[in-house]
Length: 77
Image 1 (cartoon, rainbow, N blue to C red):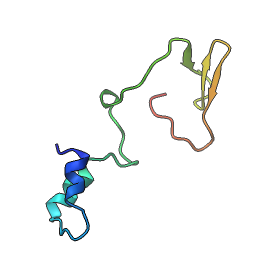
Image 2: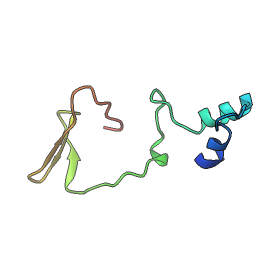
Image 3: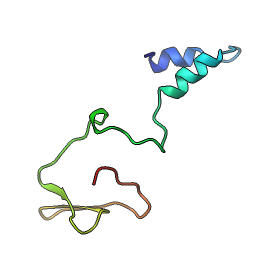
């Protein structure tokens, strides 16, 4: 896989990238409609926070609470 810098070089002013270059750039990013595999995520877990059993827009903690705004897509809860 090419780095972001290598991919940027294909699309500088005056360049004429090939179709393969465009597809390589497209395939290097996740689309918002694609589900990310948990193995590709580097999430920090905090033992003091747990998903709320009754509300998937909240994460409950000891004296703390994180509330996700309405419309946010929560993955893995």
